[in-house]
Length: 137
Image (cartoon, rainbow, N blue to C red; front, top):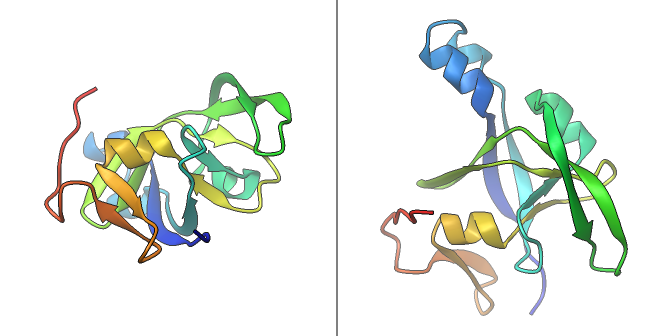
């Protein structure tokens, strides 16, 4: 199976809360559409510093992670970001790997949006069809 990219939209959750409470205009909510590589070997979403800066995401902690090459290090964890793929979304913190070449869409956001990787079509697909599903954590 090869790799492929999917278009996702990321949104700053703190901005959205401020807009919902009338403290920010909807047009001021920072969002970004990016190409992300679905990666079932990654735990969550991985972004780089450029994406973090464009979204204005703060840092709220650290996580120990092991990369595909076996390197283990401690990486910053961002404040929550809304991840949108078509009609599905989930809110999670991201792992920040400052110089990451690609945004990775890991197992937790895929599962949370009820998505699977279709290796034949090289595309994401709904695990239970195209109907939006809500997974309760």
